[in-house]
Image (cartoon, rainbow, N blue to C red; front, side, top):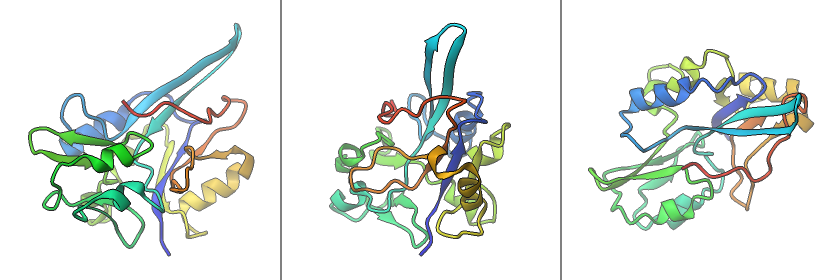
Length: 197
């Protein structure tokens, strides 16, 4: 089974926010709404031995997505390749999926009265391109691909980093698929990072 997702190398991320800007531009995301938000974690430590990293937060494309389970109309659904999407034609704006998402990765569009979220730029994938955030990353910190395919770039990056340096958002039975690479030389993984705002 396929599971298309992101692998984000936090050792490489410089917090330039190019992914946020590219996402907003490509998907016409309104002001105050984020499908992709970069958070600062730290600094921690005592000067001059400080550590800090940047944590891009996105929809985690959970294998057992709670947003899909609670949607009364089937507007929130999973694709065959594991991505979680919203059919805006079916969405009634009840916001149950927003409440169910443990990562705060969904937004309500008051103009259209529907829920929106990161689609990993599905429209670009369909023409053989990478998501806008991946293309815009000047540090090459973002990879996109099938994490279930051991020959994919994302799987190879995870294998090269070593199990102890690969992290995911807290899992409460929903099994988030996005992986973060962070070595101790860069920072300590925060097991409960703040939700997207």
